[in-house]
Image 1 (cartoon, rainbow, N blue to C red):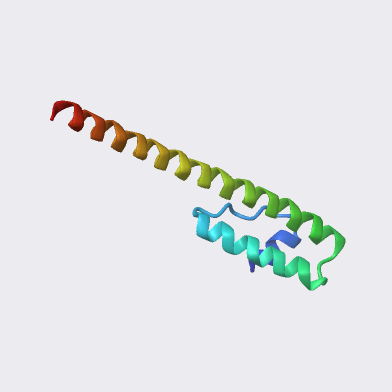
Image 2 (cartoon, helix red, strand yellow):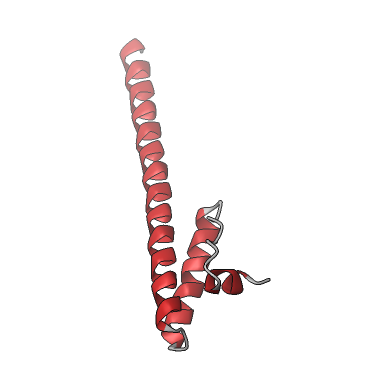
Amino acid sequence: MSSDRREEQGAPAAEPQSYEAAAARIEEIIKRLDSGDASLNETLELVGEGKALIELCARQLAEVSGALQELQLDELVGRLEREASA
């Protein structure tokens, strides 16, 4: 059974494990909505799924951003410590 068919029957789609998978699914949703072939009920379901996926992607990007900022701070502290001991 395809994921589209599971969604049409009301079964929740599995949350993608990666940013890339979520982004690909968002693209699929946009294409389906742009096609104009989705029923009102399917449109509502796709919009809800898309919103959840966008929020997932935003959380993952925020985590990466935070980790990068922390890494930059660690590098700065290390550089300052090396300069202070030289």
